[in-house]
Image (cartoon, rainbow, N blue to C red; front, side, top):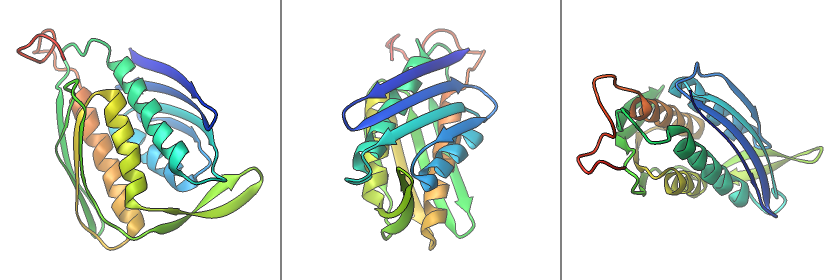
Length: 206
């Protein structure tokens, strides 16, 4: 079983992750930003990852610390769960529609050991709810915040990732298309191919 448990705690955030690659898409997400909790649920469901996330952060400042640190923790969990990367497909690609939105995660993921991220997505800032203590407050989510999440993931996971948002009108649909396509592409890259032997690289290492 390719599984990793991780606890990342700083003065700004406290994040616990339990990840299984090649699961059934089950998730338990306890996250103080309901919109992103929904995105992580979709990511797990369509990527067939069993995923538990419990997170807290200094949202009284802004979203940045928690969103970035979640990317770091999730990326590290994937790196640990993949282990020696034996017999993996390595490459994954998905083009995924969400009603009027179309996310094209092209050639998208290469589990190469070399972090690289290209992000072509624009949408206006969206007001979303966050939970601070017993209060629900409105905060602003924009494309740059998602960039921070994916860049952090790429850095810790050691993958090359390209995300292109081709078109769309509704911000929710745009972001949802991105996370679903990311999950599908990553699932394909992580898949075991029994015809392969060892590490999928002529260098003998990833």
